[in-house]
Length: 436
Image (cartoon, rainbow, N blue to C red; front, side, top):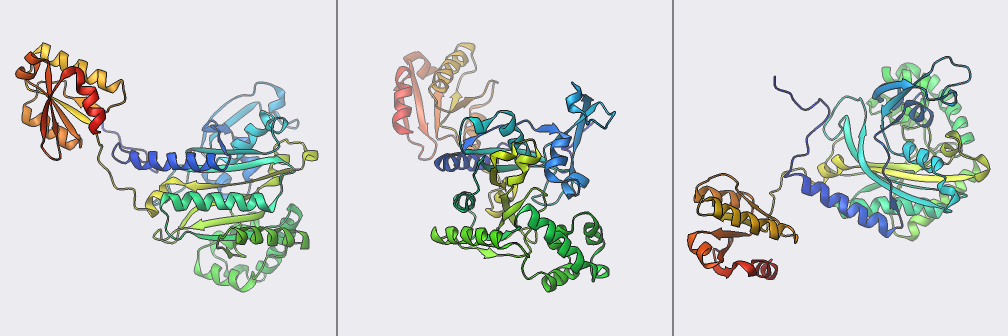
């Protein structure tokens, strides 16, 4: 029986991996230059963590959460006081923020540092309909800044600046930044009531999906891509009604961004799809991706710390973002395969055991000092060995024949210029270090 890669996933083949490695390497270097440290959390968490953080009405929880298994609760503290259920469910993580916040609280980061600046790189999972650049298993680079009394327009600007810095270094040309403010938790409740009142007058004009969103989470109507809903949203929503205090904070964020030369557009329809966002939200788009053109997004989520068990007296502040690796690679046209490049490839002209053993010893010695080298372990014609060296893009061929074997030498051929030199076997390492 022949098996295929699961629908909504993809193999990252060896020739494509260098693009991923380069992107991840740049991400780690840039994040560390801003003072962020890497954190690695499990790929699955308790389902309740995502239900609590993302919101029971979000599309992610309602439609896309991938539950992997359930197990008996270890103790009664894991079960609601009003529930007889003693089973804990686990789901693959659909995003990274909730897990980072869980780890932050569980490991008492706030007791050791005033502001925790963290980043992560890894796979996320959502059970949605697969599309180009939008898979069920996808990968993100995420950044979170969390700490007591860490509500600052400067920190918001830093987070946004970091996201833009990363994307430009990845090769995204002319990334477009949109920002908005959802105001405080109280503002969001008032906005929700206002949106319901306004859209109720035109409910029949909403698409079928948005009529359901109207009941579950009216904010999601602002995100709809259908023409009828877009026209209605543009007509009704000119600006979200947030408090004067929230407006002043948003103005301060804009001043900070202008101060460091970051261009942006204020988008009153930008709300983000997860319940935990308050105050600043933002989205970054790239050219060449069609209607689904977002490559990154984020925002402030101060109250999530309280909702997940943090001490309300600590007045936690938190803001972060996530960038989609697959979408970045699509936008930068780096999804095509590239060839492996080797420093050298061993070519053995005699199939005898002693020849093979000597070649193997040389290869092993070179590998141990960081020189990339390969050889064939089967009896292959010389022409086939050189052909393989070309296919592997080897810069040099190390040739061991009877004459070289008897004299304690080895021939080194530059595969680009065809220039060839005979050197002592003991000096192969020195020679390669000089020419590589």
